[in-house]
Figure 1 (tube, rainbow, N blue to C red):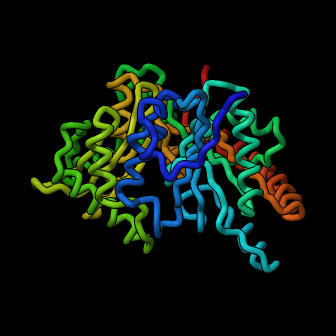
Figure 2: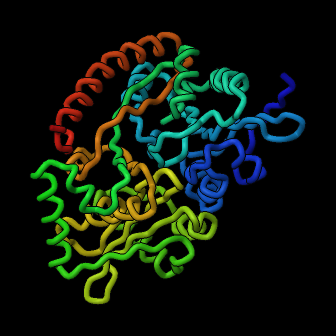
Length: 375
């Protein structure tokens, strides 16, 4: 196979049309999204996320690519390996830096070995492992790969780690009330009560798409986003410049929900979407209103999906409270290669034990599904 391998300095230096042609069309894998992270300083020097995409060229054109990062910590991954790093440290070994193939700060399943050539995809997986060994790094991790990539990595013996997320599915509902009628009585009643309370508090919501979002509205959203992190006593990953560039470069894939009371904006939630799926991402509020989080982050997004005929709504990582809002649990996965043989064996045993617990947890969640039983 006459393929040239390159480690690029960032996605932004690659041809956007050629990169996008390798993806499944998801806005979260797009050249615009990944390069906006770079341009805005959300990844790069000083962030712990150093872009180094693997690029495979055939006759000078992109035939394959991996969104790859050199990581100096484990923040922003949503697949938690802090205990692995601690074990390394206890044995006098360095766990960081490591390699991570992922979309930063985005726990959404998608392609990670970007190519339409299955043979090349298999070679890409081999080269990922080889690169970790060649650079004398502890490990390489492929986070939230799609089913096709997952099957390939499993077949090559990568260590598979199981996870759980929550997804809502639009079953062709004619309206929000039709969706509610598929839920159990208690869940349906609870959602109606929550929405009424938000309205009774004098809050109204409106949804803005792409080009309809002004710079002032982006600035307001960023204040809300910052406040969420301040309330949790943590630091935000994304810069204000990132959101402005996102609005400029992906106007057809952005939907912002604004909450207002007495003529003042008090909260906002940001979603990305394509023809098939909406991805709930970030939210925040500058005033406390009971149930506002549910209205902004779930019910407004579900109504949008119904109106636009979008089939899935990915709610992101964690949050059992999503069950009561019509979401159901589904399995996710990540894949790992540990370059130290003894640690690889120990981590493999850990993941095997963990997987049993995760499977039991998912069964429990399935039993608590919010939908009415047929018959």
